[in-house]
Amino acid sequence: MKQLNLLVLRKAALASCIALTMSACTTVNPYTNEQQTSKATIGAATGALAGAVIGLISGDNSRERRKRALRGAGVGALTGGAVGYYMDVQEAKLRQKLQGTGVSVTRQGNNIVLNMPSSITFGVDSASINGRFFDVLNSVNLVLKEHDQTLVEIMGHTDSTGSNAHNQALSERRAEAVSSYFRSRDVKPLRLATYGHGEDYPVASNNTDAGRRLNRRVEIVLVPIT
Image (cartoon, rainbow, N blue to C red; front, top):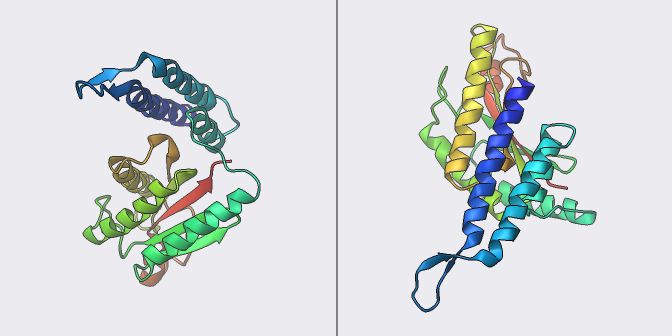
């Protein structure tokens, strides 16, 4: 599983950096208004590609590998007191945009946790995004694009109804559905990581309907790139 996750991350690095390379190497000729390849910027873009790949295969864990890859691709790292301030501003904007949606915004150190309950995310035993959930994801996406110096860790959870294997697979599909939506809205793939936790981390009792509803959730953790 770890080797598979690393392979996925490597593919994401290549996809992100190829896009970076192509955009950096294309300019518009001011006389003909035609796009052309700029040789002057190829070296810089290729350096970013190499830096991202090197960063991805180093580091002690998935989070650190993604941080190093993004720094290698030219995403600036936050340092010192700037970290807390950056996350404070991001938290305030998320609270404003998500007010009244049912999504809770919690601060854990310099990380921000968004808890998205089943009432707005997915139907029972489904990984298809609810119509109401699109509005929430769009609001989150606006903040993610404005504050691109954060990792986005998406975690799917289920209740204990059904087998462990079924719940694990369902939680993974739900996390991937959210990640795919963000990618379709131009969030860099390297920023995104998905985890399925199945029924392993309940926040309430699975012995009641109310408790099971709370346990069927998606959590998004925003981690500063330092």
